[in-house]
Image (tube, rainbow, N blue to C red):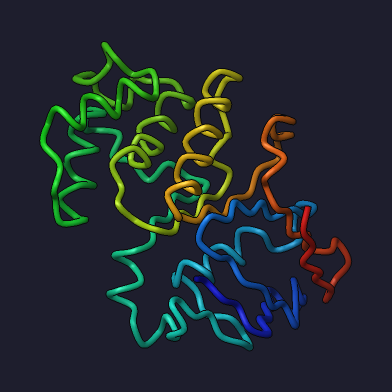
Length: 215
């Protein structure tokens, strides 16, 4: 379980959110909503342990993540708004690199299947620099088919993804939740109506206000 307690974040002397507390349990899919500048990316980076809150604490399995950083990062996968891939490498090489960072555990056939899932069959050995923005994004998202992490934190995972790809990702999120995993994401796109199980948490647009809510 991921738990945020009384989080506050200030950027450039502006309060993005304050007093923010919530829990994300196994089986949850949570979408963070809010206008541009409301602090969605800042919140996700804090929850991923990549930035520190100005106040408050984030805990994983009832332990502060700053104390159990190694365990937390083994059990959490963060994919940011930028793809984070190496454009000089091929999709297959990028996935192999990500797997090596995570300790391996998958063979090359698994990597090929993951790329097939995201529609990159036939592009496995082409340099990523020659691929479209959507295809580059798909390289990063292919990690979702390989990751054993219980918690996925995803900043705008649907950006530059077509309608079929969105439906496929939403099905993957549902399967992950069914397996007692958790998904936390931001997106500017309307999610398919068939995924009413997604719980929403709103960051208020006005300075200094934040309000979690459930759908």
